[in-house]
Image (cartoon, rainbow, N blue to C red; front, side, top):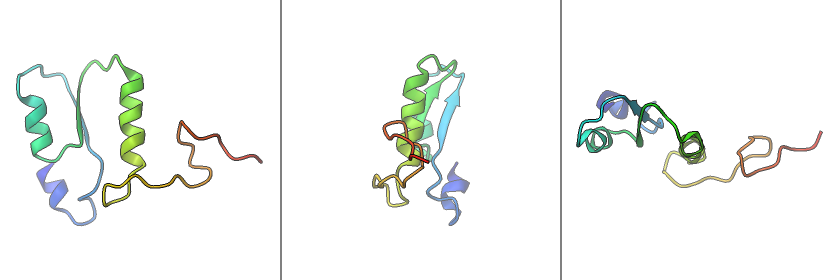
Length: 82
């Protein structure tokens, strides 16, 4: 992840770590090297996972939440009429 964060084209790429490890401190370690979020497998709270994904994808590179474009299909937005 550190290499990804150092790459100019990927520095702002959202990274969610899905780990089967139940080791204390694993989440903090993942976040400290550049992950945006950490979830343990199996993912039983799918709604939480989808909210994390939507929140990360709805941010611009500066980290600010951006306005959804028409037709982007974010869950809290109705799709455009034909």
